[in-house]
Every structure is written in structure tokens, then in C-alpha cells.
Image (tube, rainbow, N blue to C red; front, side):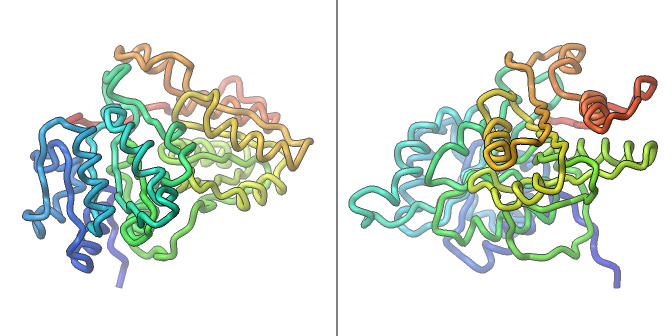
Length: 339
């Protein structure tokens, strides 16, 4: 029997529903969680089966996050859903000063705060400076919260199954460009911080989320045209960071490309760069990230702001010392609304 093909969006719903069946303390709360789109369809299945465990709220991110943190401290398993990561900053106070620190306070006798916070990140269509941001680089610096950015349905399954059982709080960030990604449902259920999604010996790309999709597209083009094979390390977790696998990949490759889906400076790219350079001084490392300005709204400016497949291709070819001047590759971004 062939395995079922499942989308990223469907996998979110399936994973949440499966865990809600096993644990009646799991409930979902947030703004517009019962909206017709159900966050790109990802909440359709749990809403159909557990409508009474959906708590729709006004726009009150700070207060709601504090309330949900309190419920987690008292034994519940809340999932705090945010349609846009940008507005999650309104809840930065309870995230940083309550959730992140709770297990360390009161001489360690206050228990745990296992809240799961989800948010949608990344480029949409003309969303501009305040509706397309990702704050994984902020959140990954916190000591008491897991930060996950699943790329494939298999990553989604493992992340939710882990986050809804662990005693630690988790932030799960979903890129808009991933909700229609599909995969055969024959993957391992074992949780992992990262996975190698393509093996090669000529170049290593270390990335995550939508960056992994772009890297696959670029590496397939280079392999087909030039026969050069590229390793791609897909980071599922940024906190904790899989330093062991990063160093293992770095050890076996002279040329390394780091690709972030946010500003390049002062983020995860710099952290990985330092990890590698501290252990291997002879590696050639290039970094790709967003320009250090707010995201534009005009489509023509978006094409300059977001690193395209062509930009990644050009830098990868330069590292591989390939003459590629005449080669242009597809750089489309197939996001479809509603938001």
C-alpha cells in the first residue's frame, strides 16, 4: 500500500488533533482561530473534532499570553496561535519575563510553563515592514524556550509531538511559503534537532524553513547542469541548536554557505559562523540574509529585498568555482493569500 501524501498544513492539524485526543488538557487560543481560513487550513481538523477547546479572543496578545502562561503553570497545555509573528511582540513581556524564566524562579520550586506558541512568518504579497517579519533570532537567545522552524510535514509532525509533551515552553514558527509543501507520510516519528536532506561533497548549505526549499531548488539545478553535489543541513531547531551536526557537516566540507530568512547580521548566521570558525580555521564561509532595512511592500522592491534563488545560485557557483555567467534560474515565489 502506498503511503499517503500529506501537506504541511494538513500535518499541523493532524499532529495537533492526535495530541488533543491523548491529552484533554490541550486547548487552542488566539485571535481569529475560528476564522474561515483556520490559519491556511492548518486548524481545520482540530476545530472539527474539538470545537469546544478553541478559545477565540479579541486582539489582546499581552494579556492573553499571560493568562495562557498561567494556565500552563497550573497544569494545562495551551497552544497560543498567532496569525502573524509581528504582533507576537506585544506579548514579549510575558514571554521574556514569565515563560522563559519560570522554571528558574522561586528556588526552582515553581514548576514548569509548557505553553506552545505558534506564529506565521515570512514573505506574503506586499505585506511590507510590519506584516512579514520573523523573530527567531530574538527568541533563540532565550534560555528557557525551545524555538522550532519546521520545513517539511515530517518536521511538523515531530516538532508538535515533542512540544506538546515536553515540560519546556516552545515557540513554533511557520513560514507562509511552506503550507502547501507535500511529503509522503512514511517518515520516522523520532524527534531530531536537524536533518540532512541532501548529501554531497562539493559544498555544504546550512539553513532552515523556507531557506531549505530554496537550497534544494538551487542544488538540484547545479547538480543537473554541472554535476556538482551539495549537502544541505536543514535546521529544525534554533534553540537548542544542533552544534554536533553543524560541526560534523563543516568538518567534511571546505566551502560552506549559511542562509537565513531574516537579517544576516547579529543572528543565527553569525552564531553558526562563530561555531565553525572556532573549530575549523580554514573553512570558506559565505552568509546570505535579508538586507538590514524593513521589508518593502512593492513587488519590485521585494524582489531586491528577499534573497532569490538566483542570488543563492550565484554565490554557490562562486564557492564551487563554476563559470555560470549565462545561467538564469527560476526565482518565482508561489505564495497565495489570503494573508
